[in-house]
Image (cartoon, rainbow, N blue to C red):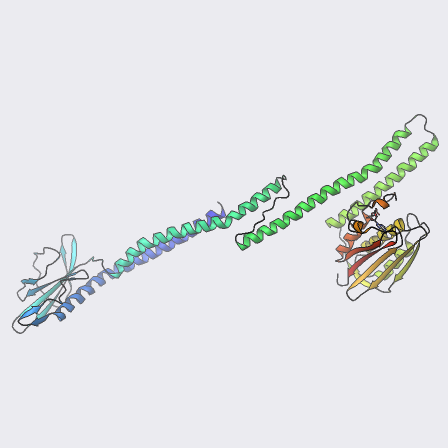
Length: 445
Ligand code: ADP
């Protein structure tokens, strides 16, 4: 059963219970109050008539005498019981002598009546006033209450059920939209589907915005995953093609031992390239998916950077000299292994894209809120438009594709390492002049 129906059934049940209780209450009150109500009205009307009856100019003034009031019938009789004025609601021929001060009950047919008499003592004679009321007379407040309760309460009940159902239906309608959007994404046919809810209840709007944000992320991650798979297979295909063509060439009949030697060297190079690529991909994926744990601790980064710079062996040195400017005892909370990989990647690039016999400068400095690690070279530089793209996976500038080792993954890794430490990686570079890469780590990371 849907929430909407459950809510409706619950509220209907509660309303029904309430109405039933109120009705039972009203009926009980009615039952006990009708009798008392009828008797007291009978006495009131009869006593009032006795008080209001005036003897003027040798006769009675009947103007203020109520022969019928509030369900009470009144008659006036002489002292012998003969009716002078008024009529009773029944043709009562039974013998009921007059009696002062007592409410009596008589039965006429299937009805019961209360009877009340008052005697007015006049100088020469006397007069009886008799009042009669049906014991089940229903013109009292209790009866009005009963009628109101039994007609109004069911209407209120019907109204509240309809209102509750409409409210539930209106409130849950947006959920159907959310559901449809989610379903079309699950089916995989439309990743760009959004709920995009502009109106409606605040809670549902908030929920839909959260879902839209989640769909955005899902779409981005699907696109990135697709891109990554196609880039990775493309990058692996190149060395594989070289290996296959080398193998093909070595099958020829006229292959000399020197040719075999060359082929093996070429295959070795390509295999190394593939192995490097796979290592880089694994590092990057582990970092991004958080499959490996990277414990952080406060480390002396100055000592670590000094050691790395001293021990670093570039793929090709090309006469480039490395200088350092390292502030001593810079302590920061970080993962030393990752920070070492980060610096090694930047150094590798600086040697790769640095100018022959050029210079590389590594500096480490601490500031009030951060630590900065900079690697500067005087190499080929990066154009303004390329500077935004160098952090993307597999991206390589056309100028640098001539360098045959490299995968376009190094800077993505640097960027992710900085991010894992709560910091940033940035570049400032001028084409043909050189580049400075800066990794900033906050001191409270
Ligand atoms: P790669 O394996 O190609 O070096 P990276 O991710 O490390 O991959 O670098 C991406 C691209 O950024 C490089 O292909 C190159 O075009 C550019 N680049 C990186 N470092 C430098 C640098 N120090 N000088 C000039 N260009 C650089």
